[in-house]
Image (tube, rainbow, N blue to C red; front, top):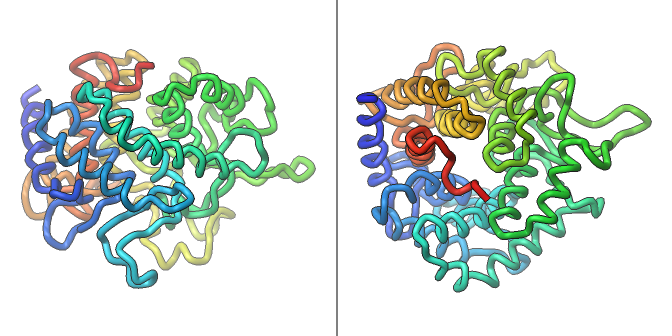
Length: 379
């Protein structure tokens, strides 16, 4: 456990670099992501909130900044503070997961610090956020629908309609907010127990499809690549049944999606000859096993470890935490860089160092292993 204990101290050090008076910067060194992203800040806080009250002011400031910049219709910003040249604005929107992570974050804060003051202070903001989400349901079936590039996989791959990442976050947000009846209805639909035409679970493949949309006389708009984060969030939030959770984790091991380090963002990587390929992909970082196209994202690795704990695969969770420690210890200029992503084949560190959510989810994973239960999502 020495390596994971070292990782614990180093993760805290990285978070100290990312903490600002206004909230969490997405990365902590000059030239990195100098702004607050809703999803990054709330994901980071899952682990940061476990370090007693050390990062409570940063978590609180993050929620305050997002609340202050909520749109009139209730949408939570994608980012605040990172100037966008196209929009000529320091506040950007056009995401769906930001609003979901904001609601989750409000309830995690209350749980972690036994402090319901922000739930009371921002009740109107939370209610407006839920109302905005309710309008993202054009079929009136309770499942959220999104446009392409509206979540953390902003430019790659191309997905729309009912997305597993979004359904998992929605389920978690509803359960944390005490809206159990609506959450359980969504769970039955997504898992194919009712209204099967809307289901995202593929029994033959043993995992949730990344997204689905309309069925045209048997020709359904959908893709079948494996969305690692979406499937893991389904396990952690409880959207996945125990049987489905086991199938998902078996698939990850069978396809070595957790190698050389946990975990590759998608499997298999998409290539120009594939039907899922979009012309604009060539303008993004889209080579197979790079970035979002099968690159390794340590923050996803943190959720992988937590998912193993959730399914009581404790020995495997410990060994994968060690592997994740090795990944986070790597660096381009120094050890323990907690990089944004690594090469999916080479394992070489890439992207911004001192990435907040790489450090935050590492702490979340480590505590899950130590406690043999996943924090916060035990409804």
